[in-house]
Amino acid sequence: MLHVVDHPLIQVELTALRDRNCPGSAFRQHLRRIASLMVPAVTADFATRPVPCETPLEITTGVAAERSIVLTPVLRAGLGFLDGFFDLLPQASVAHIGLARNEKTLLPESYYLKVPPNLADCEVILLDPMLATGGSAVEALRNLKKAGAKHLRFVCLVAAPEGIQTFQDAMPDVPIFTAAVDRCLNDKGYILPGLGDAGDRLFGTT
Ligand code: URA
Image (cartoon, rainbow, N blue to C red):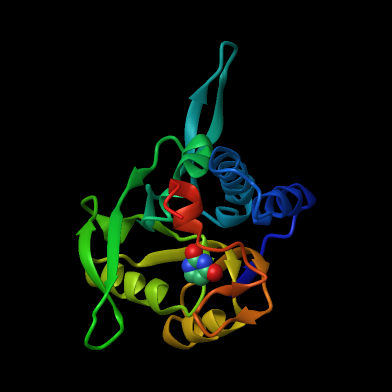
């Protein structure tokens, strides 16, 4: 259930984006292009159904997507993936989820969740560039399942082995798509070699 989307074009973009000197404007563009380049792999097994299609010459059979797609960025770094997914999936709806650390338990908790209706019938794609400890992704998925989501997948840019393990232990039914698996987490929970704080670099809050 772990898919490493390892395309040379993605790896070139990812190298540029990891560079500490990459400015925010370029960071956003690299992330957008990587997101678009990942879409074919992320959606490769989406179901289609046959539909009639009238060309200028005759009637033939085409296909339509079986389920609507709901993109779900985790606030705030997940927003960096959104435009790249929209470029190839313009018909998708968007759910939003916000998570904050509970200062007593130190665990992530959802403070905001807004989803479209009929979530159970949709392909729900959770977006968050960094899979570090895995706590946020698991909490986001718990909330989406509670809201009715049944067809879920998770997309990140860089994953740490520790986060993959935690994720797969808690959510064995949800596939992970990542552009890279990095070495490990440091003692502050940052991914090594990683790219630093994705949200800060996206939104210029370093
Ligand atoms: N979140 C980030 O943005 N970067 C990391 O390295 C870990 C978590």
